[in-house]
Length: 189
Image (cartoon, rainbow, N blue to C red; front, top):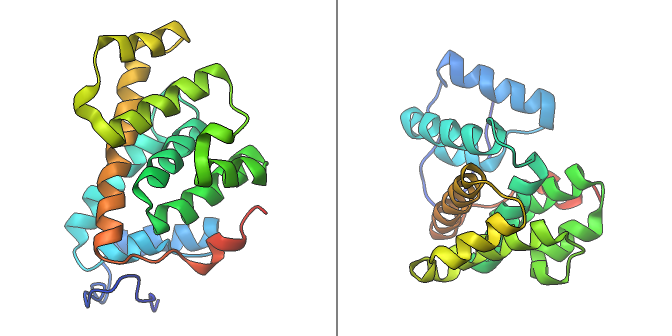
């Protein structure tokens, strides 16, 4: 499988990919119709790719009372603060798909404050954005706001973990000029 160049760096994928990695990429093609460029970007070093996918899969697909949509909403709100082109396009598409609402995906990309959110979702995104803009200012009253709308301490951990992950990946994607797959632009519109 010929993988496209996904970043501004000259770090071609390992060739051939190890069988487990090739199988993972084949599943991506089967389910998504593509290999997301974020995976292609990491494919020059299979250990780094495995570390990335392990963390992503745990946070975004693992056991949590946060829904997949809520986790994607966090990804988009954080990516909007960081102006991460890759993640805004890719995770904006995921929000559109999971919600069935293209307007929600666009609102979150532009400014989550204009989106039609529940009080609980708004508190979750306020916290994730606060982490992105000034995490050192977070104090007990900020966590208490989340508890008051129904989040448990485990939920707060999960919100913080997803927001932290996307703050890291946004910075990496911007630094290496990671480009989103073309397929994301038209998805779920």
